[in-house]
Amino acid sequence: MNNIFFRTIPICINAFNTALDLLFLLKTKQVMNKTVEKVLNEQIIKESSSSQLYLSMASWSENQGYNGTAQFLYKHSDEERVHMLKLVKFINERGGIAKIPAIEKPPINFDSMLKIFESLLAHEIKVTESINNVVDVCLKEKDYTTHNFIQWYVSEQLEEEALARNILDKLKMIGNDKGGLYLFDRDMENAAISTDTVAAEK
Image 1: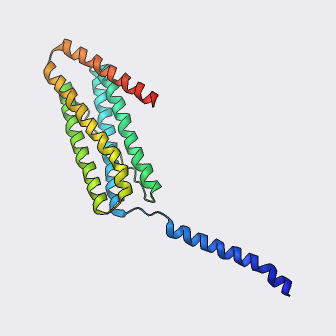
Image 2: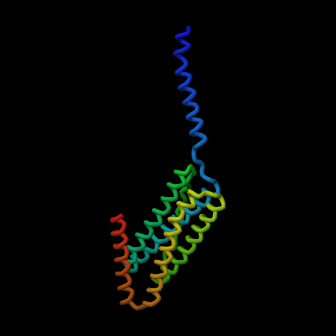
């Protein structure tokens, strides 16, 4: 009888330790702040929309014979999708639930190359405002981990806006000059190739 009693003690201890481990895991499991999760999911929608918009711009440019600009915008569209995926993975890893949005139909017709980049800049400014709102929510909710994560997007938006403004300034100087637009298109192709090279080096 005593032997049976003493043999069951280790089993009971192991069961007790397993229960404690499970309780610890349940208590320490990360659960994302719901307010922060909501604004991040809203940002996923914006990044997805950006990707679709730039894809449509690229297609229009290609059909107009601006193959260099099309290549640049196709690359830009891909980058926006990567931005969206980073958010999806971050939300899920932090204990939230990333919501994949429906694809919205973007505009398909653009009056000119100038209009394309005017629209692109206006869109990037809206995205920047949205990112700034995420930062504001993180600070109010004291979610410093997400605040740190979102700083990459803050820096990215500074670069995106500066690039769009630079391109727009060049187009305004060129106007409707066909020779100038031809050279501009070659420059855009070189910019796309340069981006590929930098990405490969990383």
